[in-house]
Image (cartoon, rainbow, N blue to C red; front, side):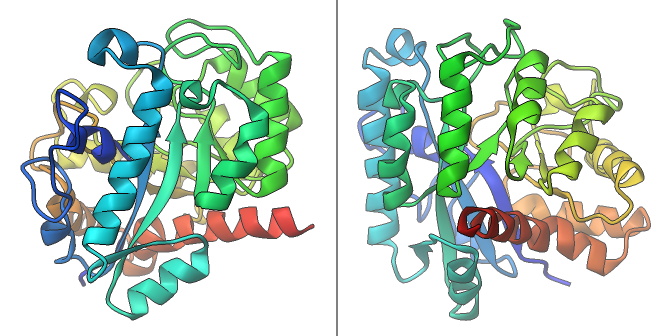
Amino acid sequence: MNFPVFDLHCDTALALLGQNMNQAGSLRRNGGHIDLQRASQLGGYAQCFACFTTPGIEDEYGISPVVAFERELATIQREVDQNKDLIAIAYSPRDVEENKQKGKMSAILTLEGAAGIGYDPELLESLWQIGFRISSLGWNEKNPLTGSHETGGGLTDQGRAFVREAQRLGMLIDVSHISDEGFWDIMDITQGPIVATHSNSRAVWSHSRNLTDDMFRAIVSTGGVTGYNACDEFTGEKPTLDTMCDHILHFLELDPTGKHIALGGDLDGIDRMPAGFEGVQSWPTLAQQLLRRGLEEKTVMDIFWNNAIGVMECAVCNHAK
């Protein structure tokens, strides 16, 4: 079975800009982890494209987080427009399904790190209007909203305001990269589903970027999902396709319904991946390995497509209340 793929996180926008952040690449075909030529061979494709902004981007690229955000957003919009025969921006789960029925792929806008909008909750409504549907509060730094998994430190008052405003709009809050303290602070105030778009199991591989079992259970209790991250550093010492499956199967032990596990490859944002996985073209290989490990086709379909659709619908319903 050629499963469709709904991937909750990639850094392709930044990758397409290249070393000089100057719009160098093509989404249709490139040498990175994701391009439309390869993705078109899947049974359907929806990709969350992150605009990545952190204070450190100024040191690396010589431009401010605000300029980086603007260039990444412009890159996604330009590439979707230039390839509108293959892909379209999706603003809702219905859009994703309708695009799939038309034989088109979907692009969903997301925010990784809020430095590009000055950490300002009041700017979230403008992002919502142009299509942003997921936002994290930060990356690996400590910032005005929260601490990270590298720094520690919980939510600030501004961080709490950010979460509340995002959820008021119907935007999903992403807890990947956040500190343990910040995670639990969010759980204390959340009024909607929480997602970890690209995080693995800390019980399978002990890394601060991964989720503890209690964190995963907490996400499940909100109606949220966790997306498997293909970064080898978060998967295992010498990871393979089987190691990738180990993380997913462990989450399934904690949630036998299988409704709260998804994909969040972190493609184009990572240097190394488990042996046997090379990019967007490799998702079917992981699906086949999960089937060999004993999962039913329905469960794989949920992980690869339905669960991400479901959490988007859940956020929309929560917004309508």
